[in-house]
Length: 636
Ligand code: AMP
Image 1 (cartoon, rainbow, N blue to C red):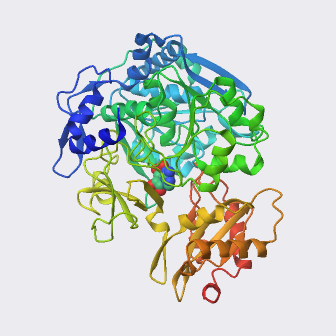
Image 2: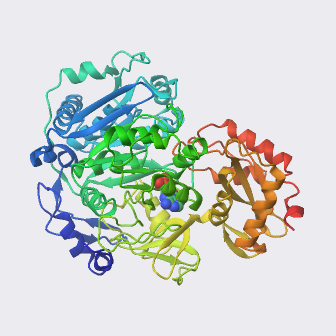
Image 3: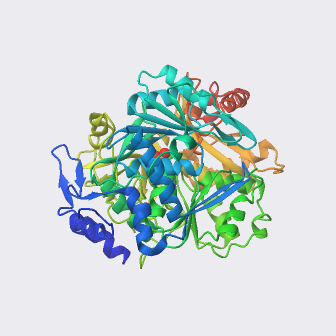
C-alpha cells in the first residue's frame, strides 16, 4: 500500500476504500454496504455487518494457527509477578469468565463497569464482555469514588468488576473501599460486584452483592462469542469535556475492528506474530486500542505492564522489558520518556539492555517536544514518531504510516493525516486557512470507521461538542496548522493558544523552545492575564537532577531564546522553577488549572490529578513571583 495514493483515494472514495479494508475482518455477516449518512450529519459504517470483537481477538487467531503463540505477557515489577498466556489459554480464560457473566444475567447490550488495576484479569474482563455483547466501561483505577459514582450513574451497569487493590510503587491502594464508597454515592446499583482478591490486600465482601472472582469463574461453563451488529457498542470510555460531567465516548464494534486492523498494519507497521508494547493503562483509550484489541486482533503478542517508567525499580525498566520479551515496537506518552531522561540523561541504564528487537517508538498523548524527541532518537538509535489522536477517534488521526510505502516522517510535526482523515484548519468563522496559518484543527466529514459517532445517553451533546461548531466538520478542540506539504503541527488545545496584544501565539511553541535548554527536564508555558496585553506567557520549569543553574540565569537564557526564536511580541519574560508539574494520571499537564492559579481564580482540584499537593506548591512559587499580582509591570 502506498501512502499518498491511499490517502487521496480514502478521501475521494471513502466507502470503496473502507469496504476493501473491511475485507480483512472475519465477519460473521459480511457487510453489503460500507457507509450511510444520517440526517444529523453523523455516519454509520458497515450497517448490516455482524461480528464479534472477542472472536476476532482470540478464537480467530487460534483458527489462523496462533493458538500456542503468546497473546499476552504480563510483567509486574510492582508485585514481582510475570506470566504468559497463549492465545488458546487467554481464550479459555475469557470464555469461562464470559460464561460467569452470562450466568449472572449479563447479556447483549448490558453495561459492565470494570474498575481494575493492570492485571491480566482486566483485559480478560473487557474481552469477556465483548464475547457476550455486553458493553464495558473501564474506569481508571486512580479515579476517586465520586468520579466512579458519576460513571456508574451514567453507564447504569448490571455488574461491576474490581480487584482488592492496585499498587503504586510499593504502596498498596485498596480498591474495594473506594468501590463501596462510590456505590454509596451512586443512585444506580449494579446487581453484583465481582471482586478479584489479590495477595497484597483482602477485600471485605458484602453478603449477597459481592462475589469472589475465582470461585464464581471456577463454576462457570465457557461461553461462545455471540454475533453483534456492526453498530452495536463495544465499549464506553469516559473522557473529560468542558463541563464537570464526563463524556461517554461510544465505540462501535464494526468500524473499530476495521480501523484497528488498518492502524496496526499500516500505521504501526506490525505483522502478526510480532511483539507490541502499548505502555498505558486499560483505563485509557490507549489501553483499549493498543493494549487489548488492536494487537490481539492483528495476531501480535501484547505486553501488559504493571509498572512505571522510573522507580520500578529504576529508569531502565522500559529497556529491560524490551530486551526480556524482544519488543518490536512500543507506544508511550512523552511524559514517560521525560521522566526517564531526567533520571538517566546519558542513557547509562539503557545501554545495559539489548535493544536490537526494537524497530521504532511511537509517542502521543501530548506534544512531543523536539528536545525529548532528539534525545530519545540519539540514545536508542531508532526512529521516534510523534502522532496525534484522541479518545474520540480511538486510533491515529495523523501519523507516519510506517507500514506503507512512500510514507514520510518529520520531526517536530505530528506528521500527516492517516488515510481516512481529511484534516483541515479553519479560522474562527469557519473559513479554511492556507498552509502555515494557525487555526482550529478540524476533520472534514465523514470521519473514518472507528471514530465515535455519539455519546452514551447524550447524542445532542455529541452534536454540540463536535459537529455544530463548524458544519460539515468534526471539531477536534485542538489548534495548530498544516505546512505546505500537509504535515500537521498540533499546538495544543484551542484554549492553549494565547493572545498577546492581539498576536496569536502558541504556548506549545514556547514550551518547545524552553524544553530545549539543557537544564530543563520538563516545562509548561501558560498564558496569564495581563491588564495591558490581555495575556502574557509564564514558563514553569522543572530542572534536571543536578542541573546546578541559578534561577536568574536560567530565566535570562530562556527569555533570550524565546525572544530570538519567536520575537519580542511573545513577551516571554518570566520563568518560575518548580519541583513538579501537576498532571493527570495519564500524564497530561493540567494547564487549565495552572492558568487559574496564576490568574488568582478559584479552581476545583481535578479528579484526575496525580497529586493534589502540587497545586499548593505551585501557588506558593507563583506568589513569590508576585503572580498573579504584578504581571502587567513585568510584561511591559
Ligand atoms: P485524550 O483524548 O485524552 O487522548 O487527549 C487527546 C488530546 O491530547 C488531543 O486533543 C490533543 O490535545 C492531545 N494530544 C494527543 N496526542 C498529541 C500529540 N501527538 N501532539 C499534541 N497533542 C496531542
